[in-house]
Amino acid sequence: MRGTLMLTWILIICLSQVAAQSQRQYYSETRPHIPRPIKVTNLHFFMHENLGGTNASAVIVAQSNITSNDNNSSVPFGTLFAVDDPLRIGPEPDSEVIGNAQGLSLLAGTNPRTSTTYFDFGFTTGKYNGSSISMFSRTDLELAVVGGRGRLRMATGFALLNPYLINATTVIIEFDVTLFHH
Image (tube, rainbow, N blue to C red):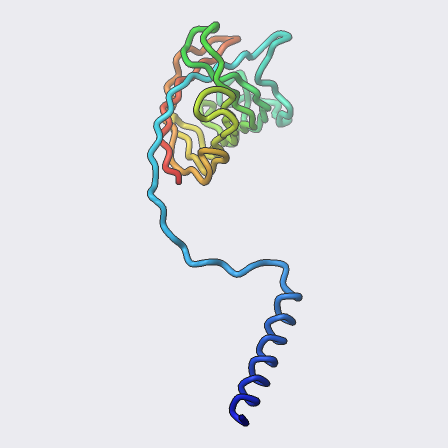
């Protein structure tokens, strides 16, 4: 009887401590990680960018105050672009739109062919409708995939870029993306 009473008191004290502790925390303890198989997904699409006119999909939002242009570029070091480009199945301007790329691109180096870029590629049709992947990287024909949402949640991987067409008003870039996700 005495042992049962002692055990009861110990349980009451322990439970009151647990209740007091749980009221002070605003988070939950992590659970053991149960690994799930990693999926590999390959995506292929074209990003279409219009640089001028009333339908521009990339615009300069800030530019450095450089009086000389030593790197012979029409767009100088320190230029920041806001981007909202359509993603299409093919390079043709009338090919099916599957989503859009929104983000920022900064010419953060003196080489005019590279920039530091953040993009969120949101898909609006097909299997990945409502899902997106995020890329943040130095752009030089490859971007790092640093996240995703929806069916591409927690994606990592890389995107290989192939400039398909570049002229004064239009940029079309082919994307081959390899994703690793759950």
